[in-house]
Length: 362
Image (cartoon, rainbow, N blue to C red; front, side, top):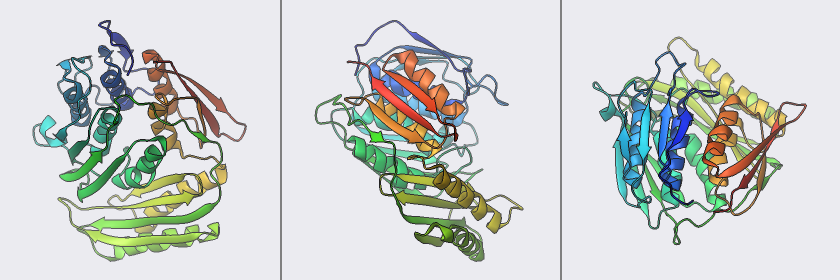
């Protein structure tokens, strides 16, 4: 969307929060802008530094969109060169996180999709994306969050995309699958609508599902009952459906969406061996209640995920967020390295914050 240049941009992969989001944000921006990129010290301060299977899949996925030349795209690599050779091309794409590592991987399919969706939204034409791997994992947004929170907000900005869950994938086996259809832009690189979202309005409903894979029926029922009891004080309808599903390995979790007048917010917690079902429900419900008490328009995760598309809006955007996290601060730093927008973060005395995004002229 911006003028392409041969000068490589150097990104410090250990800056700030220092996680995989630096990598994913950088290659997504490189695909959109055509900017050559070099990333050093990738996840250098993590227990297992460098590229894991999920990161490697995201890098190769972004490269496939723009025919990028890669160097350093190997497991555990802490250096990567990403050199786009063409504008992002619409098409039918399939990526499998398990193929990135011998023995397979349950790496997050949602993070791979989030890497490629925005570039494909700017491509001239429709695209389809299939991603195989883990669908509901720790430290990554579950499929429910993308369907109920992220994609509806992208639609508000002018991005047409839908997704479906074909197979559940839990840690450590994975083998789940999602499908996404992305409308693309009739006029390539058309700007998105800006966002003015400082107030969320009244809470209309809390919906969700408590899910157990290959486990007894009482587990999702107990999660649903406990969450419903905790959230009954909100004064809104609470509809949490217990579900049993089949998957390649056992797994459990609860996924909640708070539907406010102006914006949805999502909260979840996964089960673990030895963790009571009620404790899983309590964690997710507590996160929702904390967000509700904050009065912010968007939850802390959506605060991160709105930033990148708003860098390509046709005007200034402002939104209030539950918390300005180190993760968000790091994403702002990456955006500013690409010079696609100026971003200003303001904290309030209560701990919430306001994000202002001013896109650079094309």
